[in-house]
Length: 63
Image: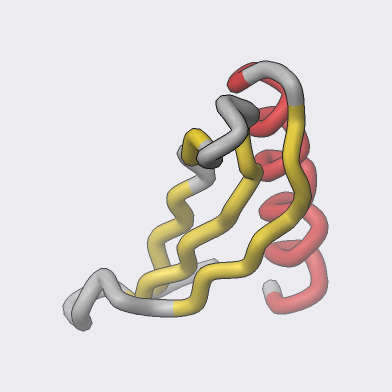
């Protein structure tokens, strides 16, 4: 989406799994934007893939 940056980097949970998350930041503003927990996955690759799919679907609704 024009004017926004998307960060889909998964984060490690206390249980050692990977939580998918998407950070949407308006360009030129603080990085403290919206976070949405998307679920926990066993691998970083699974979490990143899910976050990427979520981002693509989200962008398709707003572009």
